[in-house]
Amino acid sequence: MQKTQEYILKNKDRFLDELFELLRIPSISADPKHKDDLLKTAEWLKLKMESAGVDFARIDPTAGYPIVYAEKMIDPKLPTILVYGHYDVQPADPLELWDSPAFEPVIKKTKIHPEGAIFARGACDDKGQMFSHLKAFEAMVACDELPCNVKFMIEGEEEVGSENLGIYVKENKEKLKADVILISDTGIIANDIPSLTVGLRGLSYMEVHVTGPNRDLHSGLYGGAVANPINILCQMIASLTDENNHITIPGFYDKVLELSKEDRAEMAKAPFSQEAFNKSIAIPKESGEKGFTTPERTSIRPTLDVNGIWGGYTGDGAKTVLPSQAHAKISMRLVPHQNSVEISKLFENHFKSIAPDTVSVKVVPMHGGEGTVVPTNFPAYIAATKALEKSFGKKPIPVRSGGSIPIVALFEEVLGLKSILMGFGLDSDAIHSPNENFGLFNFYKGIESIPYFYDEFQKIKK
Ligand code: BES
Ligand code: MN
Ligand code: MN
Figure 1 (tube, rainbow, N blue to C red):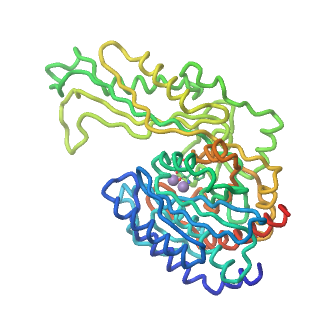
Figure 2: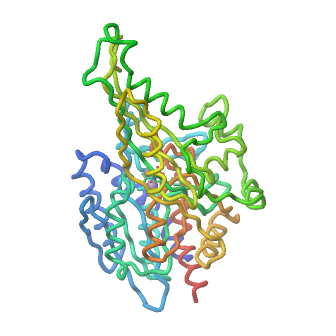
Figure 3: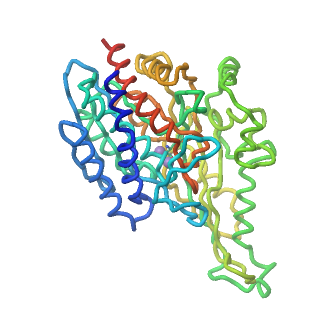
């Protein structure tokens, strides 16, 4: 991979210019106004794949946004890597909290990234990381050092639940045959502490609506005699967790895989500073389920969080109103072996059962998905370990992440394929937040590491 690495170094500025082009397209999948931007991004990727040297690239339509699919099959006897990533991004709101516009990428130096970081929505999640794969591939092809067959499957609906990709995968099992799935959509512990993600949490996402009177009321004329839906919603939400931050939904923990003492001790070896954690997000003190550490709370334990709550009057000044309705979005992160459909049902039943008879309550499940655990003793994982050891000069630590990529569990279920979660982001990259950024170090380290993975994987599969 010598020539490939030299090619990468020689072309690094162009790679960055191209990534900037990609980051300028506001491909926000949650907002239908951006439909054309998503289609434009798919076209852009197809062209880039073609010029990088794939046999063919196409834009496969779905009921939603298309999937960009490409292949390079050099020899049926060689192993095949299926690269997955997503070209859609989260909304940039709240816009006023960005120091520079979300879709006008710029490089700025930061404390964590003294060499500079790319600031833009999608810089890390997932355009920067996904694009690293195209550039690593381009380099290997250009240098005649590609050691494996490659399939690219880049979707445009990851941030809204990957529903159509699920259908696509089920319909294209034959086409998607591979030896492993390779994904860069997660992170490492720190730039000098490489890690590989060996777990993702599942997710159940719900919307709840509480309705009281048939119209907003004068809170003087009616207040005190009519149940206020916002007050009620707050009481209901408050009752979903107890004083130990345990979730009170009956049956919620029934299937949770409890880790052994040994496994927890192993986890505790990964470097973590509570003080640095608190400082990094400016909280006075951490909080969570009693009996568990912060790394455990964010990986091996399920959670329930209100993502948004609205109703009544929220404009300027004061308005004395007793609102007709209150609403909230509530999500639960799940761990092995909780099932998202079951948990959504448990939530719905429980939430309705705690509703007082003074209001009516509607519960709408939004989307969900299952968690994953990646074993650490199969060839692709060992190849990934060796690859990162080469690029970072240090063995990567296996870490379970708290985030979710629901399609990973589906890949295993439908294709029988395990995924290597070889991401290069940092928790401080502010993904989904204002000022999302991705270190130049991280962008280039990804491009450097990927060819090593191909190489090690091919060797280990021989
Ligand atoms: N790339 C993230 C997930 C992630 C980030 C996992 C960092 C591990 C470390 C992905 O794009 C994402 O945001 N997933 C959503 C779920 C999806 C169904 C909306 C999430 O985790 O909230
Ligand atoms: Mn992502
Ligand atoms: Mn995301």
